[in-house]
Structure formats: structure tokens, C-alpha cells
Image (cartoon, rainbow, N blue to C red; front, side, top):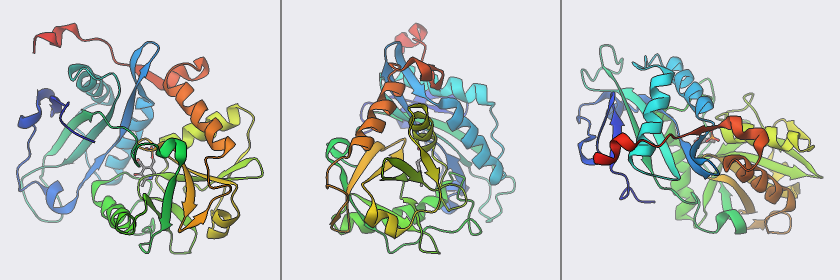
Length: 315
Ligand SMILES: Cc1ncc(COP(=O)(O)O)c(C=O)c1O
């Protein structure tokens, strides 16, 4: 991953050059993680670059902001335009997009009273999140010694900056032990999710995944995969996932905006199923990329095309 190709950032209402998109060191969000964000992917489609499920991501951004009492000083329509403008102005055909809203500089009391809400949208090219080849060959993961926090401690269905320290600890521990990613258990010992992805288990031709009764972020990719699976006649059950489910699984895969659909082929040194990407994982990958590319016309309503912006070519 590199930011080198990103030239423009949308910040508080206007596009600014990458180097000028700065924040003061006294920003509340820097000290306390008091912000909310989204990760959205833009895909090259038959009709040009398009954002995948932008409406759902903005819906979740405003939901997360609401949970934390952060009043975003822009409408959803304005932020949708900001996202499209950022992709278009950077002239990306496909990229990852990061809208973020956080408390800026005014005071450093833990209560952010009086702090302005700052809003930015960044975009940059981002390939396979868990390493090149991971989507074909699968990734090796470990069950983390760090537990996922409980929804009575922090709102697990909100995507908030400070909450990611839990994910960071787990991801770093996994990497330090040579694994691509961490799986976090909840306080009851059930599987919660990866540090930045949801989890599906395939058993006897059915998909199983957990839901908001467990401490997970309700992934938009997870929702897409559930709909795509059901739309193609597969059964999907939402229930607690246990470590026993992992041991007995025919296939396991991650879903997330960053990882898209990535097979998990080994957990703590134990092969999942055959130890290779399984047929239903591959089928869901194909269905997912048919939707993101616009090839499957049943799901083109999930795509928001980035209009060409010739007026900006003079910048
Ligand atoms: C902790 C966590 N769980 C799950 C997901 C997957 O969510 P989505 O599919 O909306 O990207 C993400 C990524 O956003 C995440 O950070």
C-alpha cells in the first residue's frame, strides 16, 4: 500500500493538495481517538469507476457518528459528492476511500464539548489487504490472545477510531507470530471477528456467520455476501460461531471492504478443510466480483458511478 498516487484530499468542504491536508497536534481526535470513519472501495466497472455500496457506508458513518454524538456538518448527499470528487480528482479507476469525521482542536477535556467536527475524505490505490495472492491461496490466521471488547464497553456496531486499538493489538500480535491476521474471541469464548473483517464458516454446503448479538461490526461486505449467497440459492444461517465450528469447517472465509472475500486456509497451524480455497468460497468470490464490476446486472443498484470531472483537469 502506498499513498504516492494520491494527490488530492477533500477536507472540510473543499479539495486540497495531499500535503496541505493537515490537522493540529492538539486535535481531540488525535489524543482520544474521538472520530468515526468508513472504508469504501471504488471498482473499475463496465461503465467506469464506481463506488460499491456507498449509500450503506454513509448510512453506517452517520450511525457511528450518532452513537458518539458527533454532529457531521455535511449532509449525506454532500459527503457522497465529496467521495466521488476525491476519486475523480485523483483520477483513480479503482481505489480504497476513507471518509473520516473527528473532533478537532479546541480543548483536551475528555468531554469534547466545543471541539469542531472535522471531515476529510482520502483515496488511494490498495490491493489485496492480507497480501498478494491471499485471495487465491488463502491466508493463515491465529486466534488472538486479545479478546474483542463487549458491546457494553464500546458500541461494537459503530466504526470508531479509538475502537481500533483493540484490532491493532490483535493484528500486531498475529503478524509478530507470522500470521496474516488475527481472529478475536468474545468474552464468552465464541468467535467474534477478524481485526478488520467478518468471518464465514462453510459446513455441509451452508454458510454460517454471526450477527449483532455478538460483538462484531456489521460488515457491508458481509451483508452483500449474505444477499448474494441467498440470491443464488445457498442457505445462510446467522448464529454464534464457536472454535468447534472452525475445527469442523469445510471452508472458512473473511469478508470486508479491505479483504473483499478472502479464504482462510489455516488456523493456528491446523488446516481448514483441504487447506486450499474451497468451492463455495470461490463461488462467493466470483459472485462478489461480478457485483462489484457491474457484470451481474441484478446488483448494479449497489454501484454509484463516479462521473468524469473534466473541469478539474486544469488542476
Ligand atoms: C472490525 C471490522 N469488522 C468487520 C469489517 C468489515 O466491514 P465492511 O464489510 O463493512 O468493510 C471491518 C471493516 O470495515 C472491520 O474493521
